Structures are given as C-alpha cells and as structure tokens.
Length: 111
Length: 104
Image (cartoon, rainbow over all chains, first blue to last red; front, top):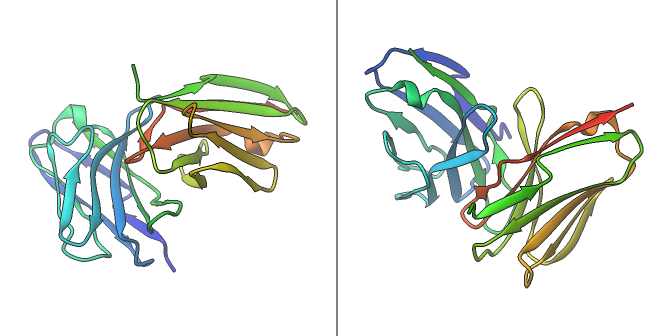
C-alpha cells in the first residue's frame, strides 16, 4: 500500500492563478479530509468527505472546492489564488472508527 | 473559546522524564485523536480512542468522556520524542498542539 499520496509536494502560484492539489489513497478508506496548516498554527479543516459522491465544508472552505467521484481520489481545487492561501496542505483518510493516515503535505506559496 | 484546547503549549523535559499533555474539548465526540508532527512536518496518527485507555510502546492515551478530557503520557521520554503533539475531536477539529522538546 502506498497509503495517502499527495501531489505536488511544493508549488508556487501567482495571485489569481488556479490549481488542483491531488490526493489519492489506496486503502479503501471512506473518510477523507483536507487541512491547511499555517506557520505556528494548528490544522484547520477545509473540506471532508464520508464517501464517494459526498462532500461537506469544514472550518475554512472559502476559496476552495473539492470533489469525490471515486473512493480513492479527493482533489482540492484552488480558484483565484490569494496570498492568504499560502500554507501547507495535508490530506488524510481513515476507515470508519479507526485512526487516520496523513499525506506528506503540499507546501503552497502564493506570490 | 476554541473547541479543542491543549496544555501546555510548550514543554521541555530531560531524557527519562514522564510527560503528560492534556486536551480538553467542548464538542460532542465519538472519538478523540492524537497526532504527532515531527520537525520535518510529517504527521503520524498515534491513537484514536473513544473510552478508557490505549497503550502503544511508551505512549499511553486516556480519555474521560464525562469530563471531556484526554491525556497523552510518554514514559521514559527520549530526544526522538521531540515533536508537536496534537489532539483532535469530532470532525477532526484539532487543537494548536503541544511542542515538546526532550533534551539528553
């Protein structure tokens, strides 16, 4: 098992550009999550999904969109990137009533 | 008031000391999660517990559902335990973490 794979690991965007952060898991986990972590701060939940076709907003969803067309994939879309979206993004997945697995993170800088 | 609060925010210890990190939450939960984030940034899930106590090696996690409180204990701490420890509740709403440094 590869676990949770995030791509890319690093990215620099210009203000107003858009991009998709990819997240794939091969563990057949139903639950998937996207977080952002700002320097010195905790993890903030952006969006989550409890299964294919089902997504819901977390604490900080503005400026982001997600989709969950398959169990394996949970991409995060940034439209019109802003400097406030400079952060490290983590994807996580877990099965029902069990611990999470985290991806390695994507370090995004918007300039 | 944050829904998940941890204490202390920072903790230093000498190698071999017994360490306790506390987590209080105000939301209803079905389970509480403890994570470890190393200086390189990677995150590892340590425990998910909904009652009682769980042990893994030198790490012990306890939870009191009635008091909405959980503790993470590290016995015989070691410099390699230096990391940020994060607790999370409900839809994985996380505290800001406890930064632990263990000195030899």
